Length: 460
Image 1 (cartoon, rainbow, N blue to C red):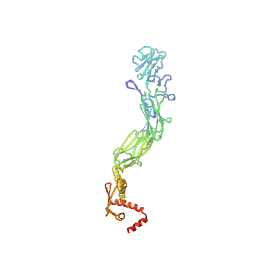
Image 2: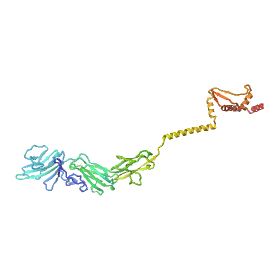
Image 3: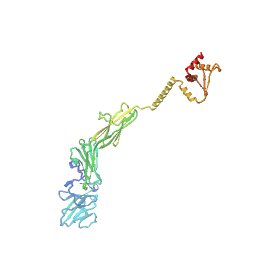
Image 4: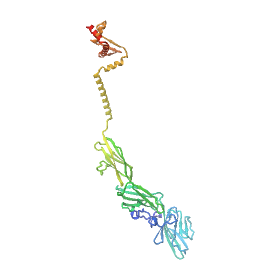
């Protein structure tokens, strides 16, 4: 064990990976006991474990911060007159504790069976080398003990998955920080350790994090991996799991862009473990050609959402369907996002055209009506104004004293020009003749044929 900062010993790092069963770097190697438990965990002595060295003269003891540890002075002779404990240099003075001499006591230290040293309320600064020395009549016997004070992590392991830099392999991360020494971490799949699996490409560990790199050919949707952690002073083995999933995409409605405007196409990944790599393609027949950011194309990604912005839309080059591709080591998903590029519509011109057409239609209807019945408007005006006042008709005749017969003859044969004044306004004679012809028709309809014959005879 190399010396650490401030005299604190530094753990000798053990190489991680499949060769040593996935042991994390920094975990001390110990002999295996029954059920995989390290040999030396003392029953009835919480937080204590040791590893016997072949010579039987030295041992390593692990204690837990805040716990109690018992350092045994082995091979003590019954004839020993005194047992002395030293911390650090066995030749330093005064010693830490003596069975005969009363030194300034530390209530955390005490002797058991007049030989073993008990330390309670362990602290990190208690870590180090301890030496017990038994004093006989003429010889001294020493026994060295190395005390390592451990601090287990207070949290539980955290697991997550990532895609390797090449994009083809899966990396499983397991981290359990906050412990001293570093914990032991290993990955399992369906109850079997991954370290012995053929699809493990590499296994690396750094401080309190263990990483397994797997070949993607054996991966499947919803496969679950489990990371199990252990610590030298923690009898429990907490675990965490990761469920890998292939990408899932959310569809988007087709987009429309006017020529010369900008448009943004969106691709959203709703599910993916590990996170998917999102790319955009213009031609599905050439998947190796990806749209690169630059020029008229702007690609941004925030979390699981990727956006492709096309500037200055062109009807010749930008219309059609684009492909959003999301890929992780588990699988690949593609989504089509279609874009339609159209010419902008002139709203002012459309409104003006509608108004012009409306006016042309109205004028056409008016012209047609006047062509086929020019007096229709005047008749309508007469019907509306027949109750507005009296009508004064001035008739130019040859003799005002002519009899009734002559008046009827005049009405039936020759019409003179007349001017009608209706409420002070002049009306054309044609209109007056129209009205008079209407009245004559009505009168003739009321005369019998016999009376008309007699009138014709008298007239002759």
